[in-house]
Each structure stands twice: as structure tokens, then as C-alpha cells.
Length: 136
Image (cartoon, rainbow, N blue to C red; front, side, top):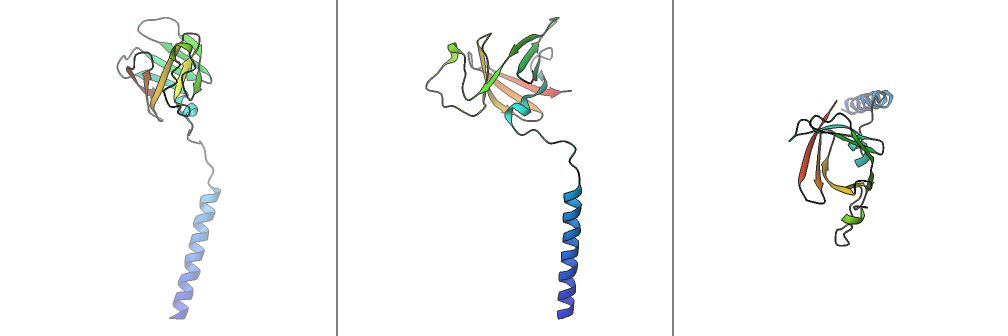
């Protein structure tokens, strides 16, 4: 009986070591985005207006819609609250990286949700929701 338990223990340790070695030597090809800014990066299509596209590229926000020939391009700031003067609100609780502010156009959006496939924004000036899906 002791020999059987010892043999089982040795086998268990052996197979566990093989599993750990295999897991540790497997190269990772792509790290999944984890921060809000990383998740925002890329091209998004409106789920309500199929002609409307948003692109977040580094610190630039680009938008095009319905037959326009050129993209609107503006830098944005990701912050804990709107940084635009017309949207300053001392009553709103700050939330880490939940606001997209474009100073030049004086616009601000609250990030309701963002993941690898979907983005929902709430325009702070009116409160309407804008829903997007990621496209290639």
C-alpha cells in the first residue's frame, strides 16, 4: 500500500512538473488590452448609424459619417472628469479614465462601457447614448 501511494505521489509530481514546464515555455503572441485607453484604440462603427465611424489612434479621435469626404480629427484626453470648460461639474464624482474630452470642439463623452467588441458613450452635453461595435 505504501509503495502504491509513493508511486502515485511520484507520478503526480512528474505530471505536474510537465504541465508547469509546458505552460511556462509557451510563448504569448498577443497581450490582450487591459486599460481603458488600450481598449479604445481602433476603429468603431455606430450600431445606430452605419455610416458613422470613430477611430481612436494614440491620442487622436477621428470621426466620419454619412457621405463626408474627410475625417474630423482632433486630439483627446482620457481623464477622471470632463476637462472642457463648458462641462465642468463639481458635483460629478471622478471616475478613473471614464471621460473622453476634446478641448478644441469643447465636447466630452462618458464611457459607459468598453470592451474588445463594444463601446457605449454618453454625450455629456445631452446625455444621449452612442453605441459602437469594433470593426477591422
